[in-house]
Length: 619
Image 1 (tube, rainbow, N blue to C red):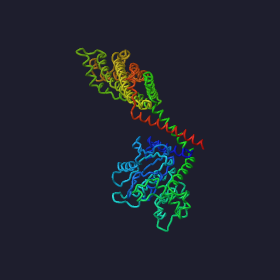
Image 2 (cartoon, rainbow, N blue to C red):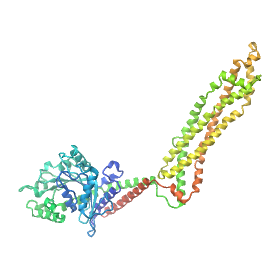
Image 3 (cartoon, rainbow, N blue to C red):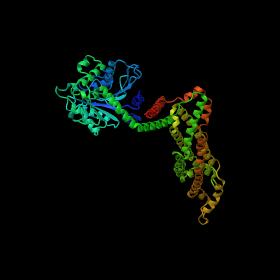
Image 4 (cartoon, rainbow, N blue to C red):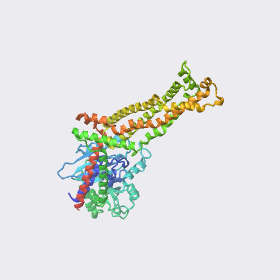
């Protein structure tokens, strides 16, 4: 195989591999790697309906394999990849949607193209931009990728929407506008070239004519005494590349199933014996057309090798980065699996601590609990109602029983203080719960942000359950501690407080207007002083709890979460057997498929890079 054949064959194989791997599906916006496919040159066959497009393609391939009929026959793009194989190899065709099925019956190929078209468009005259991919392996072809497009039309026929004319043109444009697309413009010789749909469109998208090859069909059907020399010799319409005339099989030959090899020989004889075209015979015909396209493809490919190689290298980098994110396959032995699980847990734990310590957002919500929510809750406690004059009188009177208090109603004070302190339980428990919910949210975010864990939904679920259980234990311990702080304040009242009471009462007394002792002990002013004293004590306790509750919560919940969130989980993991460890590392099937596809792409692009390098050096 020559270097030219090797280079074109390489590009063909890359295009085919991109197609098989799903890197090209006809919609570049939805395919991450379609840019490589589009960077490789291909040939789009463009022409009006009944211009002879199908016959030209069949002549190049040397096989009768395309559906025929009147009106619009090609209703979906056909991406036809020709692969030249060794002369002794068996010829066959293969559809992308029928992988692994080697087809040698070309009548079946023709019918399958029709059936596959109908599967998408229905048995109507509708069109679809979804391409059909067909590969042909034969010693009688040149390496080429040809794209057969629906024929351009000017009017909609019965069964077609009025937009069909515009829809077909837009579909054809989507292919031929690409700078790496070579346009094979098919025009019938028995019509004025000025009215050629293919030439009109190619002139719009390729005004310089650098990408356009003109093909004249039906030369043998021109009126007697006329010829197409003005077009073929570039006087009527000049292109940068020479025009090529072809003579396809007649309808009678098609009806008789005349062999394509025989048809090629008859085509060659027509030009050699033609008085009009005999001097151009060596530059006419479908065989010459295929060679001309191959030669042009070689020059285009060689010119674009640097950019293609650069794109391949960039794609390899992206794929390797993706592989690193997805992760490599897991080892089968229990020791390696245990090590992997521990590494994944440590990665999660590191991210969780970053959230707590401020490396990532979220830890500040705990501070907000202590700085805003707890003080606000303390301020809202109903002390005004509890220490109202009416309630103070009621509590103090009930505490005295049948014996009236003499100086300070100690039991009354205790009951008022204990009743007030019981209100602190609510904010204490609420602070514990608020921090618990923040920690749970941080755990959830940390699991989601641990890239390495995304592969293993089972391990994620186990880790979430284990952390939830640990946080629940920390919450219970924290709640007990916070409630103990409140209960401790109620269990022992500060001695200094009671020592100050008689002194305050003496200071409050006025000898000049002092009422009788009995009136003083049960007067309104007396109960107001008691309420004021208790309020003062409760305020002192509130300030203390405002500082000690956060300390208890941080010590029992936040600190424990940082130090021992996964300790119990680690203990349980160490007891698991190999089968259980393997179940934890049971990957998401979609992710496994993604890794396999990524690995295949990597293999493809690395092989392509090496082969391009080898062919380039062989120049």
